[in-house]
Length: 496
Image (cartoon, rainbow, N blue to C red; front, side):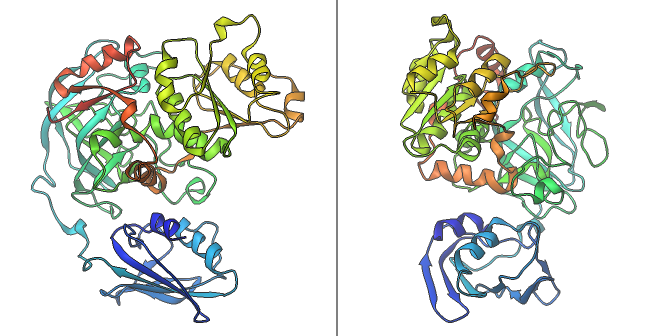
């Protein structure tokens, strides 16, 4: 239980936490790395007397400088609470209606850092950015001006960024209305430079990951524990401006430059909506965890959060690119005994072994559907499958290769918008389950910090995803590598 609460508590470090039921019987445990829950962002509000009150929770929560103490009533009624309180209720309220919790700080509580100002706050920042002026043409590194953040926006200094296939797809202007000039990039890590009005979740100096989708915390999706598809901040590939005023924060000699996915990380500085930033542990190396903000989390979460393979189970992964290998990594972490990689490129098989893949199937080597091949290999089908290519035939194969009665297939890849999924209804009636997922079912602000913690705890291995590194001045080399299909992730050092 200590680990559960430590993951959920956010803000500051604590050495020890004691939990005591109202009856007086203690539940003692210790942890390091826990953080104080924030008032903003969960169902508590602060009064002028320094007390936090909740309409449905009595008595009030008091936050003295010497520690953090509260009592919580199990009868609280709310459609969705933070996982912190939900976990506490399920773990502690089995035999008692009230619980007393005391958190002792590892160091004295400081004043909120949001009151601190950077020397550039409120001013236009000139910096270098890689601007795409035409589809498929090399990016041009030139000076742009980055405006200060407006309400609910954050301006951050990008330390490291990476190239994802989504950047390549829209740079090539395939299948959508071209929007140029534009600053691409959405896998990145950096440091908060300044914040706009109303921002309280992050502060100047915080280490953050920008995410192409967001979490407003207010809509029905954000309040649901089952969804991560925010109504306000859901991915939008066609918007080139910020939400608050419909304007771009980038310009060159007064000419606006379009944003991309609300992130635009191929710039030394960028402006992002606060709901699209995940605050992470400052001990995490930014040149590695930057890849967590898109592809790795998408594949990892598809397996761990949606497919949910059991210890000793069998899993088939369709597509062994970065997302597919992240899905295989999730199967490895979950303890799957057989991880079958399916890909048309045999050159990927050797690399996939590093991610726990135990067997390989190339559909081109067989004269029958690959789902039949896998069913024969596994005595009726695999327990779980994850499809990461977006090819409609691969999607059908991924579904039809799972075992009847309990098999679960998860679709991750994005197909052509006109593609039609066709299978015999009996495949569903025989108790196979088909699921889809978006960004691995991770809520950006709430869940991505825990993925970074998985890396820090040596559970998730990120180094093997990183196959190339280039300085910002050579960003076009990263595009060349991806066009040729070489490597998995190329890290771009924005300060080189």
